View 1 (cartoon, rainbow, N blue to C red):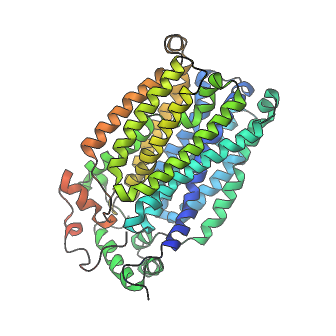
View 2 (cartoon, rainbow, N blue to C red):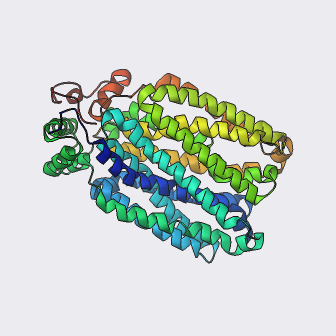
View 3 (cartoon, rainbow, N blue to C red):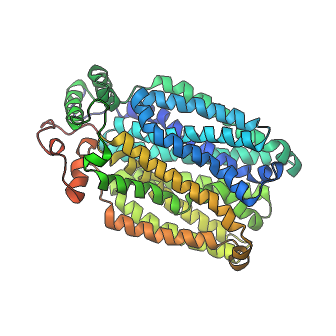
Length: 480
């Protein structure tokens, strides 16, 4: 028999990798539009506002999907919620590829947004609920890494589709191939989900203690699993028949507000503009669509490297050091990119600035945001609080992606700033992000999910008594 402190990490990694495919599709679905913006604008004769809507309408679906993801995951389970997301990804990919008019294109893209919203809540939540606490940062960061890989893969797919193609063909058919290519990863995701177990914490919420014990025993061992099960049940003593308590009545609003702010700041420092609009940003400086798409691939590869570094560091250095250093790096990169764009430099100033920004973001906000919002909320409010935080994240993302082309194409701003205005605004938000992290976010490295409420509320309010003392098993640390 394994020792009481041994976990089957390989098994945990395998099931988290399957869940992380939801992140891959999240990245693939949201970034596939980057290579199709120009052709779509011509095919449907879009105004700047409609161009922003073509990109950001998916975020409306994300807001709706993420808001209801908590209720969906409670009613059907984390695993079944991800299966529903896989089906919606498939419908969206096929439908948007064959859309006959802009209205149907928007409808199918919003269906994809529903899938992204669900996956963006449930995938990291599932991973946080099955991962050992000392590995939680790295495993949950797999969600972000998979999203970045999905974005980079689709950048490469878009490049291959556009390579050597005429602008006329791209406008007529090329964008359809780009959007339709998502069918393949959607089918893979849906099939592999049948091979993973349900979240043990959801099983406890539903009174399926035997199923939860079996899953925990597979992750660790029977003796340790018994202690973990006791801790989970103690942390959920006040959840009631609906499996959760009212956030307003829980006394946990400070934690929820911090989670909302963390999720929102990941967006207001400009990452979606970089990942969605990079080909359009770089096209005037790179000398054409094909070269802009190629440079976008470089940014995607750099993002993967930066995220890998963040995954390596997050459980070693903690969340806060990465967020602080990363915010400064994002500021430097954004200022450098804005300088290159303002001067219309045909060299690599803007590209290098974007690379610095992307590496800094990946190491910090890319890894730490998803980890924090999946772990800081206590068991009794996690599903609903995380849904609210991610909905706030997508709402902020919608505002950013919708307003960027409107600001970027504004004649007066373009004349005064040559397209750099938005990047200077994002630079100011980087400064704000650093201040907020320094002032309000506590370190969570090494804190078990069952003790997270005590950890936060000891700083911002009165901790729930059962979580702080006798409600927990007195022998051994919780598994996660």
